[in-house]
Every structure is written in C-alpha cells, then in structure tokens.
Image (cartoon, rainbow, N blue to C red):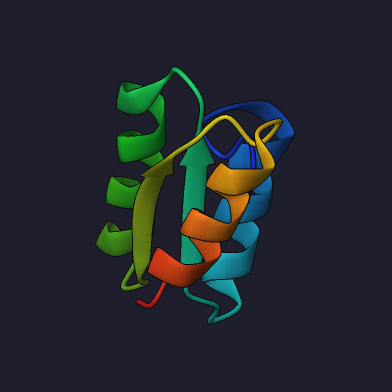
Length: 70
C-alpha cells in the first residue's frame, strides 16, 4: 500500500489486515509511521512488512513487489 504510514493509506492497511490480508506498507519518508502501522497490524494478529521507496521511480516499484513475500 503506497502511503501506508498515514491517513487513508494507513486506514486501508489496517482494514486489509483486519480482513486477513498480508500487507506491504510502503513509505517514502515516514519510517516511524510505517513501522507503527506494522506494529498495530501484528498486535492484532496480522502480518505486515515495511518497504521504503519513492514510487514515482518505476525501478523502485518492481523492487517492492519482488521483495514483498510475507
């Protein structure tokens, strides 16, 4: 989920996790916020990982999807 560290992205990550999905939380600059989302998901019994990338760079997007095996 791009922008998963705050706002609508965070809410979407939490919703997906509550419905049983494993979540890849992407952030560009808010590592602390992204890790907090992962901590909340794991505390509720879900699975999530943090990925840092600027998704405006196409080469970084492919790296997220190939590394996102939870």
